[in-house]
Image (tube, rainbow, N blue to C red; front, side, top):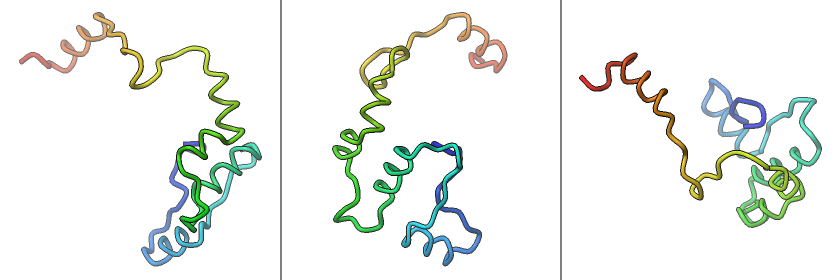
Length: 98
């Protein structure tokens, strides 16, 4: 999600599995140190020390980021508003009611 592509990619399946097993991935320069740390901990091959969801939510990056969410819809907690104009447009454009 940070980069817009998967962390592990390779056309050769054996190379792909090796990359996953060894957590062999790279970051773009602009990624912050906190995000790099969190991703490394999430993609840790050793399940005994890999971050679980509680650990992710306690990580400084997640804590700081989640505190900055001032607007928008919280998934599973708020209803997504439906814009009738958009619905009508989609029905007309894609002929959804035929």
